[in-house]
Length: 247
Ligand SMILES: [Zn+2]
Image (cartoon, protein in one colour):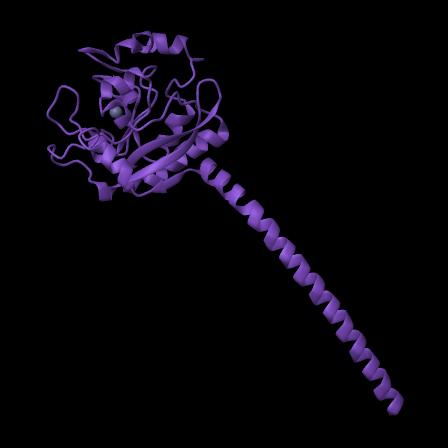
């Protein structure tokens, strides 16, 4: 019995020693892990955010910059601040450089739009010339189009009509508008888009970056989410225009 107790006492003290050693290593390892994660996590998540895009409420400074530009309180029926979301989106420009763009759309379509642009960025399947808020052009659609700028929300009427544009509801996006112009009986908008305004011309310049064709990755991405494309319209062609309401 006494020998047995002695062995038991030894076993217990050996176990206590091993336990203490393991706890020391676990503590050291967890300290190391915390130290490493403290260093690594902010970098990883910042990069992740940039590559997966972000969706946020309209910040005060952005809202202030929209007044009497993309937001016009005198036009009734436009989406209001609470309805809108600011998207920060990764894209590749025409030279292949990685950029971050900003786009404002209705909160109802924010996730779909973010997912489309992240997919195009990840697949490297579609180039975007430029993506600045249209307020950088004082809300002037003609100036934004001439600069080949991709934009979303704009509280305005349909060009040459009293009807409210889908852009005013935050449900439409114009993409690379210079190489994907709006073509109607009244002409081509923007004027500089005349090199890309007929089906024949568009067929010939298929290697032009950012061109939106029926089979383009961007056309398929939006259509698979139920969006309409202005390139399918009959009476006019709005090659730059995708909308959630089909208008
Ligand atoms: Zn449009």
